[in-house]
Image (tube, rainbow, N blue to C red):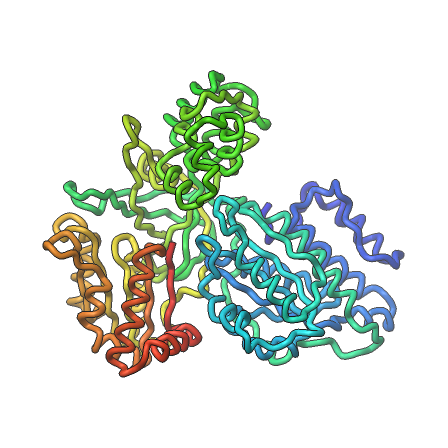
Length: 609
């Protein structure tokens, strides 16, 4: 049962009926037994639903007092849509607690308006190594400035989302939580930090937050329901899919073909999943979550290293099954690293850990998997001890490379297979080799869509669009170009693409040529770095064409980037600032403000990883 569905007619029905029957005579808030067979998300939905039903069954005076009386602003910082989905869950349940909500992206909030909001919650993810998500950068910049207003009288709570595999775990939420307090705001509920398995703690925080804020509503009989000032109209959107990372859709892989040339140093593949009767909807700019399985050879090698048996009972299943589908065995967990260092204090790993230098440790771990670590010390684990220090196996998200207007019931991906040798062993990426090697055409894999409302084709079909996507970063721009073609958009399109060698790495060359001759793609600037003595990158081509690129921006153009966050995206951003300064006759400070304006107007968008 999905987190967005109402309780099933099988099993949970008697519990629901008992709760409904009790409402007519009870004066207490609805109570859902702990052993009721509902997920955390369903408990949130039910609590709001039952409270709403109760409000409709009590006498008039009490019913009026149960009408939403407190305006709660829900501010969202999101990179992949998870925070937005949690905010939607909170909004659906809010009225049952006497709360009226409005949801706003953090960068759409003027910090000067915070004091007048009265009550707010912040739900934010963390991007990369402790950075703000793209749609929260400008908000954070203003909030931490010395000119930020005092927030005495503002009541708040923060839900932080993150991945404990990174050093900056939930850092964005932690920073915002601390800064709000520093400015005088009162914390109604302590911040909750959610790891990759966020559903249960997020649902518990939602219930607590709504209960506490609902209790702050004025106890007036017959009062007017509170509505947040200037609450935006609800935007039309897709129905929430029942397919999630907890309940993925088993999609048939219809196409699995290599795009890169035989002499390429990379292996880039094109995949197409058949959506069949799943009801899955997606938009150009969204990501597709793929639920992978681990490499069977690596699983067997770890079992052998443990001197265990594949059929040993572990965690309610067999050791082989749990290592194949249950745990991350490619990337060592922090708990495993700490356990090995503690048990083997004279090991190389313990020495590196003692330096307390994150970059040194990251560099040492970068190409090592769990088997490498187990073999690096004399420590011996049994199966139960090992799985206790492993993290759950997570989905991998890939930018969708098709438009639903052109894909005829399918969803496309463009993925580089990660393979490399360490000593005599060949290592592989988890999901990329899962797709390439372990899901044959006609086979199935669990998938679901992650909406990315912050990364979209311009809604104005006349607006110019500039896209920078080297390598597999071309994926979403293939979908953008398909989308604009199918919509009959008249706005000009300009793509910067590149890789190492034109002869081997020019993926989708024929398609791009057709888009050029068909007038959909107006400009294509290529940067193949290894085809000449001096390396040429997409940012090189941007600088060479800076005058025209700036002119497109001045005409209302949108600028979109997809690809590597640590290097390419930063270099592209620097080039953008420099060409705006040069061709706009601005200082670097003024160029930075120009870029900020592009971001505020949603004309500078990124899908980086």
